[in-house]
Each structure stands twice: as structure tokens, then as C-alpha cells.
Image (cartoon, rainbow, N blue to C red):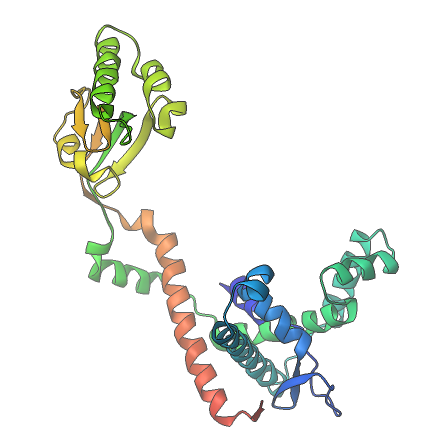
Length: 310
């Protein structure tokens, strides 16, 4: 979550400028947001070609507003961090510079060319990195939330219904598509399906028949679809398939768009997932939710005091 939050905060902007740049589009607590920064953020919201050629003015204006609002929120957090005395460590800045130069064969000229291609500059990048370090401290001090073992177990106990594995079935399938443009397409599909089923019953492996006859892309895996639960299998055959037993081979099932042949490998009953299995994912989910709440609450509080000009 820390990486996600920090990456959200990374922007290219000038901070606490005595004289604001001419291309300033907004100011947050004395920090200028410049036009290039706004353009960059808009481009991240939508591919550039779509932005320039396919959007109506109303949609373009909406995107610009969304990008500017995002930048304002970011700078609210950043200026708050500065007010709390959060500062980047010089050793972190020096390390990042060395890493960048090393990647550019220790050539500042190559480094500048690289950033030009990225539509930014080395200086603006380093300014953004300084900001990233400040915002990481805002996250650590004000937003980071790690659920305790007790909290995780309590949540699991009160929400067991959310941690159940549904009934599932491991199947192999052959699907023979019907050509709707052919008046007798359904008959041709049925004939082909009957031929495929006969080969399986005569001893040819399901996988070999699937590879030769099936229209489904699973044919490259011998028709093996793996474990699936209700809602994942074609609706028109799902009920019938779930009634089958392990090792059972279906007859040809004719449906509107084609014919199906299914073999059941194994079935898994619905079961309760133990705490040990879901603990890590649950921890991430609860942490994400709690941190979003804390972030939103802090932002709302800071916005009331922020001096914003746009």
C-alpha cells in the first residue's frame, strides 16, 4: 500500500516559489502547479491520441478538471508534510542521482536526453523525488495502518460467509461451433460432434479429439478448462455439467450456437476457507480500506485550512 500511495503522490511541481512561474495553473499553500504538470497528468488519465482527436470539449474539460483536482490534493498532502518538518534525507537524494547516472553510463548528457524523451527534465525529476520522500513520511506518520492478529481473527469470525470456496468442478470440454449463416449449420455441427464423441468412446484420448475438433481455444490444452465454479461455465450447459460425476463423459449437448462434449475430471464441494489460508489477503484488504479512510479524513481536514488559488 505504501508504494501505491507514494506513487500517487509523485508529481512534477515547483514548491514555495517566491515568484510564481508564468505557466502556473493553480497554487496550493504557496506551491505552484504548472501547465506542464497538468498536461502530464491529463495524459496519464487517457492515451494522448484519444485526448487530442476523439474527445468532445465537454469530456476534455472534465478530464482537465479531474487532473487538476488530483494535483491539488497531492500538493495539499505535500505542503502538510513540509509543515510537519518532514524533509528528504540527503543520502537518499545522492543515492538516487548515482543510480540514474549509472543507468546512463555516467553521462549527464545521456541522462538529459532520456528525460527529454519522457517529456520532463532531470531537475524536475529530482524535485519530484524530494517530494516523494516527504510524502512517504506523511504516509508513515499519518496514514499507515497495519491490522493486528486479533483484529484479523475478529473480522474473520464475524464474516465467515465471505470466506467460503464455492462448489467447483474440473472439466475438459469440446465445443463445436455452429455457423449461423449456414441453413444447415446446426446439423453439420451435430454431425461433427457425434463423430468426435464416437472417437473418444472408441479409445482416442479426449485431448487428441479436442485438439482436432474443438472450436474453443482450450483445444491447445486438450480441452482442459481446469477448476470452474458456477457462473464461469456456459450458462446453457452449467446445470447439466454440475450434475455429472467424476470420470463421467457427457453425450453431445446441442445448444443454439453449437454442440458441447464434457468430461468431468473431479469435483470439489463448497467449503469454509481456514483463517490461515486467507490471513495474508485479508490483512492487505483491511489495511487498504483503513488507510483509505484515514487518507480521506486527513485530506478533508487539510482542505478546510488550505489556501488554494486556481
